[in-house]
Amino acid sequence: MKRWSKVLAVAALAAASGSCDGKKVDRPARAQLRKTGPATVEVIPTEGQLPYCMLYTVSEKGVIRQLTLTRENRSIRCDPTKPIANTSFRIPVQEGKVRMYIFFSDDRIPAGPVAQQLYDLRGQDRINAMDLRLPGRVFVETLEFSPEDTAPPVTGAVVGSDGGTNGAANGAGAPVLPDGGTVLTPGSSENAP
Image 1: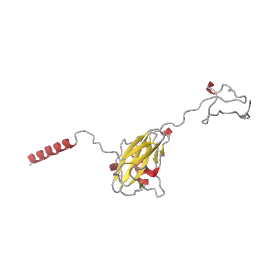
Image 2: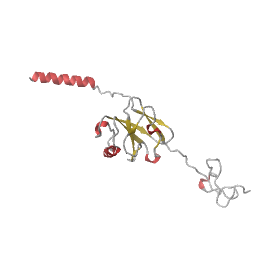
Image 3: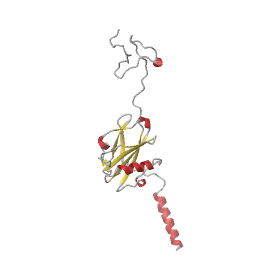
Image 4: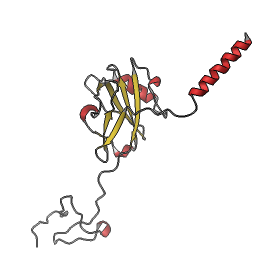
């Protein structure tokens, strides 16, 4: 009897080492990000995904946001190759890089328990469907996005009523407005000589 148990143990180890050779199995992405601006992004499901989804972000600062919020607070229909919710999502720059969690499911699931479980698992590096207590078939795709600042800082000086600068504000000259104009002080006029 001991001989058979040793043979079975060796066979099991050989089978396990053959299928788990330490290489990561690459699977196709379930969704893609399409950057639409410095701080905006579309999330596009790929072909063959489950029909419903929910989208959450967790920022570097720990802020969790549900981006697919509906009146019923349930997952929404997500068509392949079309942006989720047919919209671009704006990510606040001040919160830093975000990790986006897209939950694909075969049925509409309530969003509240997902948000609570994300909060409970917020310190974990990777979250997968096995970490969550959700009904039906659920797949999780994790993507990262780093928003960029959209407006460069404006520097300049205050323009006086005579059209000259008073040398304040970094000595850099008059501030230029986006339309090419300059900032005027109160009491001055554009038509002043």
